[in-house]
Length: 75
Image (tube, rainbow, N blue to C red; front, side, top):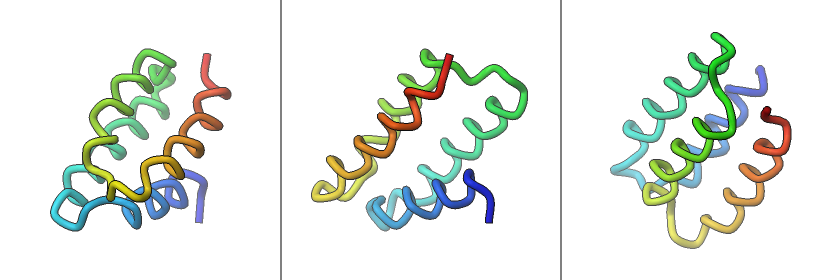
């Protein structure tokens, strides 16, 4: 399993059940941008703003920590 699939699974497991399809679509779009080399910190910030409201409230801190680590690797 590649790192994108691992992150997708991690995120979906922490997403509200009725929002999982929406979250998956956002993440797949971001993965496509990343493959094209156009996923930067601005795109990440936009993605995070879309994804945070979809999370199970008790999981927000955990996901923010994981996303912060990922963001440190972006240009």
